[in-house]
Image (cartoon, rainbow, N blue to C red; front, side):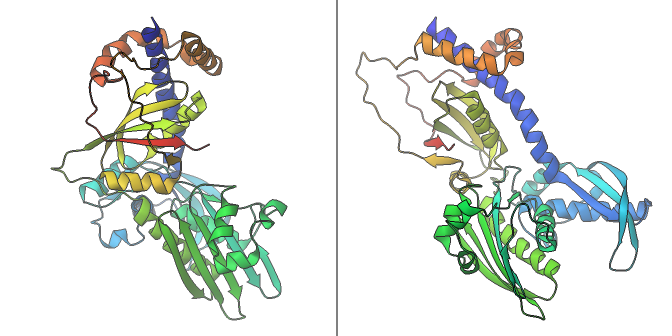
Length: 416
């Protein structure tokens, strides 16, 4: 009876997670594969030019390489356009040639197929899971010196937002309130000092931190930049009379550096996909389980994710990788959503049986889940029979205690 009860708990988790994942991940993918282009009219020639430029932009985003189109044979844009539409522009602008851009062309591309095209041509793919990048920009324009905040309205901030969106990077601007100022000073941002930057950035994201120091000397902007990541730091300087051009170059430099870390090469066509297991602790609520499932599914190195065991404190997943184990582990390390932990080994006696979660604890878990998602609970009766049939085929049950797993297993803790 307890084993059947545990199976129902697992089935509930699987059904709920799949339902939630489809809704959450759709929004991320939509932003990554969509492009908005200002155009002068709705003519076919103008549209096809915009569709081609938009295709290039998406390929740059998902490859993590600003010059990927210099190396990749460009396929026809029509092959990957899912849909497009026009919207009028309230305040038309002029392009470099003085043409009035009065229409906004909104394009949605088939990102999954574009990712496959990259892999088929041996290019890496930077998937839709992307940690927020914390942006620290210190500006000195004459006598004024300030740090750009999330609430600021600034042409430099707007230029940075546009460039980051172009590269598919999700940014977090700091509040830079009294709490931040106790940790990080303007001098720390200008010098790219790692310790205070990392300490202050933890408030906003576990992802990379990008710092920039921009100074106007009367003729041009002088800037120094640093990108702080788990895998290593990057430093560079740029000068330009035009702040838009300078910001665009700096963001491309940062995005390319992140692409080297986060874009994953797939295995060769004749190579076998790698399978591994992940035991992840601190998965003690449906919200955390959903977060973990979404995270694993969103990794570009992962083909499939299959839950093997779930209890009220941890979860075990089997993942099939399209990358090497080393690339996958490096990706997880840099994402900082999971923390590696040493496995706890318990020497079993001959008569010892695996610890079972009490029926009362199981009941509490099920009750909590039912309260949070009563609508999904109704689907269990209709899917239980199918799930039970699939259980044997999909290896949802834990391995028998007398069988030693042959797959590599890695142990992590889910960060809050």
